[in-house]
Amino acid sequence: MPQQYDVASLGNAIVDIIASVDDRFLLTHKIAKGTMTLIDEFRAKELLKALADNQQTMSSAREVAGGSAANTMAGLASLGGNGLFLGKVSDDRLGKVFADSMVATGIRFHNGSSKTSASTASSMIAVTPDGQRSMNTFLGACREMVADDVDEEQVAAARVLYIEGYLWDEEKAKEASRKAIAAVKGAGGRIALSLSDPFCVGRFRDEFLHLLDKDVGILFANEDEAKALFQAEDFDGVIAGAKKWGGIAALTRSAKGCVIVEEGMVHEIPAAPVSRVIDTTGAGDQFAAGFLYGLTHGKGLPDCGRLGALAAAEVISHYGARPETSLKDLAAKAGLL
Image 1 (cartoon, one colour):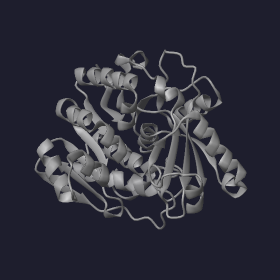
Image 2 (tube, rainbow, N blue to C red):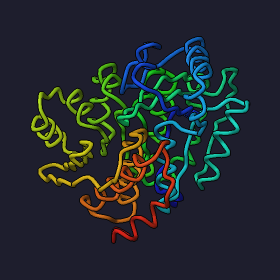
Image 3 (tube, rainbow, N blue to C red):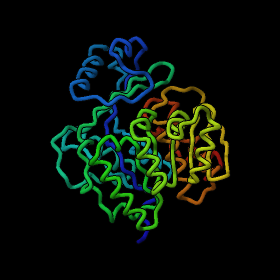
């Protein structure tokens, strides 16, 4: 089968509501700093009301299409890559916002064939002055992704299938992921997994390890996620665990850059320069975008890491989880394309 896409991705289709807040706002409304917390519809409405009641905060709020894997696909497109995103939205205003946004990036969006009565997912992202983001996510229609929503012929036309760990919070989404994995592997493609966050690893560590053993050949994780997965006390233990596994581990360390491990080879890549960190939302997503673009375009692992670092640096220099400057142009100026 011809490989029509560089990357096909499964993930939660979410509309982000991004707002600048102070630490007092987090404390007042019991928002856990620097993590992603799943919330119900009541809590989502409660937090949106809190934003509306705070006029200064509400004036800075922006409503944009998001979701971890979808953000990665937007970054891939910004580099000139060709991708397919499979996610679930409702037939409502936010669902249209999401679909239109994906099409505008040049990424093909597949919403599946099953119907949903739930509202399109949304996430309130509270950004504090230190650049930390605290996400409160109502999954809504995301919870209703099922195996029938996966078009096997479409996903099998991708060189790499990229799956976000957050999907493991729903059993039916796991089934959809497994169906996509089987289709891509059957066509000779590769499987990549993002661990999403340390709490996600805590919930599904054994299942993730099984995936790494049987299906996944490319792993994306930050330092805390990798420590949780490999049960390591320090980063040397993470490196040892990644070497023992044997696949490609792309490990991000914020200002320390990233480390790429493949069997016995270890590549240390410095962080790309950024004048000021505004919002760390999407840094890991964009790192994955740059890395996957490099991997599907014949780049060596060090250059894949450099492309990832460049994409991450761009996105943390402004609010929002998607590039505002052409990553293709930035990469060309840096001599990476």
